[in-house]
Length: 293
Image (cartoon, rainbow, N blue to C red):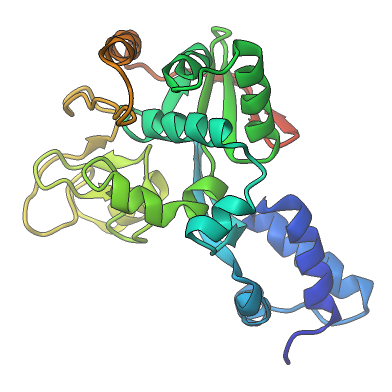
């Protein structure tokens, strides 16, 4: 059919929202078709036509998985494919803010459960060469949540935690694979990164929770490794059986900064590995309340 007015309207909305659940994308496509009195289209070939149009401006719509505390959600995200100096020059963040984001990403990727406490994240501003004010750091985190780069989860204890959204994981996927090759895990089935799934501590195979659930429904051995090279029991990626991972610090950090980071890491490591029940999840400007199980 080719790129038409329905595709253009859909793209305009995605340029504003950047990230939507797959179910929302289906609804959005339906509304766009209805707007112009056209028949409903299949989402996958529709995205293909949009991406052909976006090639020249180095943007792309990608399907991915967003790992939230209550489960995995298929998402559609609009990502920037530009790399290097050009992308950095167009970034809405200052160099100081980018340095903070780099430290926060490192902390999240190398954490045991893919999330960090809000206070721990704010304290990372002390590790930047040109230190940020705490108030500036708080505003930056708020901005990152509103722009859907981070997810903010509030638990019934009142504690607030941050985790990576599907948008930022898709946008910096290459950077994560090159920089944190020893720390990240790819799902055995869908090959996308997973931070909250299951992991085999013998052969290091990892799976998203939803991918694992589908596999074990047809497998004769529940919670078994699907690799074929071993038959080990799979536990959560955040299992205490996995070795503690130490966050990297920037090359120009002083010994004092390293000691400060180690202190914060010990605080994280001492968190009890228990299932925390949510009160709410912030994803962009949306707030979703959950009933306690």
